[in-house]
Length: 245
Length: 77
Image (tube, rainbow over all chains, first blue to last red; front, side, top):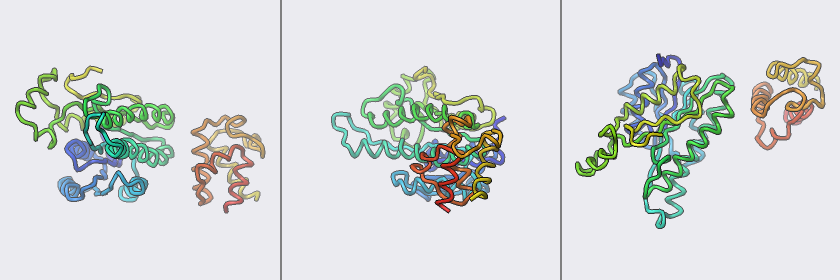
């Protein structure tokens, strides 16, 4: 089950907790992995840890020229991009009435526009090979909203609508497009929270704990596999029951 | 000229699974040859590869018929 031998996957945001876990899971299933991110050092570390079949592809997703070249660079390095995981994301939180145009634009650009551009570039060769998997990492807040995150929630909800539309268009070509929507996941970001803050969060989660990056990676691995060929346009919520959608 | 037309016709026949005789000058990919809009994108990709040319999106939208395609490729190469 879930064997990705011979497939090549491009993962954005691979320097982060969730992206790194997805890269490890796909690599563990036999895939070649292209590790993309803004900071090169953590990508090199991850590549060294994975050993063979790992390629470092630094890219600033707020630069459209760099974004437009990324799929080709990945394809040159790995021979193809069969699987695209749009995982990179940024936050610029502020209450909506104080949110600046810059805070809005930068989040939409990196989270949604770069995802759109990478999808477009990756789908061309996927159409030709009649096989492709796109997994866009959305968020629970795209479905529920969250105070202070109008920009982030809009970008993550936008991802879902876009994924469904693309899924419709390319379904006959053997390409699936799905989202994974994580809830609260224990990463470097949540480690900074105090025990009290963590307890408050956990009280809202039926599973009474945060999720792990590996639990998100398992969802991405499933959607990237041959076994998920009939699953498209869906959003897999991985949130310990925090929102049952 | 005829060489380009033959190569384009071959691509169209293979991709859309239509009879060669139906691929005539004024044949519309969508209305006459049963293509959907994604097929037209794939046809343009195949033309680009076969003839080593780039067909920008705005130009691709003007290629509606077999004759349009042959003319565009002749002009471009």
